Image 1 (cartoon, rainbow, N blue to C red):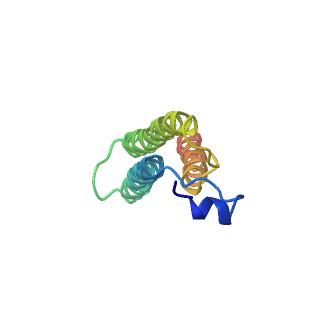
Image 2 (cartoon, one colour):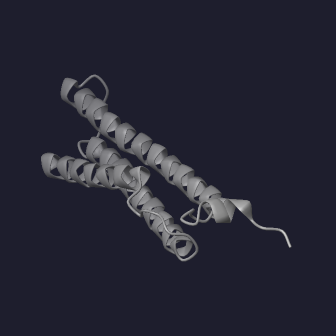
Length: 133
């Protein structure tokens, strides 16, 4: 009969982590970070288009419809915010599914950053809408 020397030497030793769950968790983190990059690109591009078209309209060099800067900015900033919210929802479903198999802290850095950027996206969209009215 063979004795498990590791178990007898350290009875308080914790169970090994489930590497499959950890890899899935890290893949979910990377996917959320991809959503963050996409959303941030849309938010910044939307604001940039809004400001550039607004300046062009004020200078009068190129004929631009009055509502074109606002519409372009709103479309891209709202799309970026919605994309991020969709990414967070997908991430949260994955976390809930994984938490049944393996305990971990649900407040992850990528989730915190995405929530901050979603709030910034909402504020940016509201700012463009209210400024243009």
